[in-house]
Amino acid sequence: MRYQGIIFDLDGVICSTDEYHYRAWKALADRLHVPFDRARNNLLRGVSRLASLDIILEKADRSYTKEEKAALAEEKNGLYRRLLADMGPDALSEDVSSTLRALRETDLKLAIGSSSKNTPFILRQIGLEGFFDAVADGNCITHSKPHPEVFLQAAAMLGLPPEQCLVVEDAHAGVEAAAAGGFDCAAMGDAKDDERASWHLNAFSDLLACL
Ligand code: BG6
Ligand code: MG
Image 1 (tube, rainbow, N blue to C red):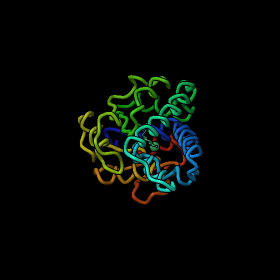
Image 2 (tube, helix red, strand yellow):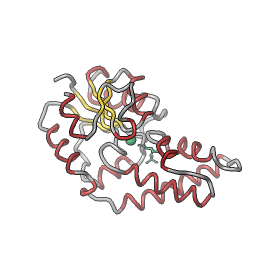
Image 3 (tube, rainbow, N blue to C red):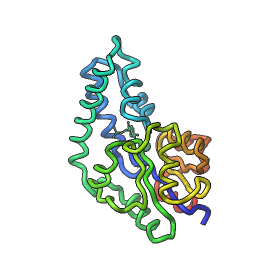
């Protein structure tokens, strides 16, 4: 096999929580009368909660204090968590589910590398708690993507050097983070055509052909 380990982004790769992020940010932006649409939402992929809020507020007609921003981020997270609460194992597509099962049958080590502080909650909701050999997430990093910290941490937890791991990403910020950390990257979704990626996936299961 070309790689010893795979590090998956979570939102928009394993499950479609990226759609819930959009809906929660959209509700907040509408309340604040700040223009926000799906094109701007794509700028938030892979980016931390507070950095995402800063990007949204670039279009606001007033400035916000640090305290106000903390409250707005909390409000968005409350909306988002309510959407996550209704999500169950059926939120995993058949394509993702069968591919993960096939990968688990190999010797490859599997990890999550996500900017999200909600990662443990999401993994529990979709029935993947304990499935991965390592989970590096927003709770254990100081720099969000495009910084490579979360992927470097996941690789270290797997006991593998970056060049032996493949990162799977749907965010340009994530593809950039993978490249900065010395990882090969398989890009999909919004980032599929990113030229910094080594592989371009039309479907999650296309991953099996990259190994
Ligand atoms: C990333 C998402 O996985 O996590 C971003 O792509 C999100 O859109 C980030 O902002 C942080 O998520 P959370 O759950 O900590 O607010
Ligand atoms: Mg993502």
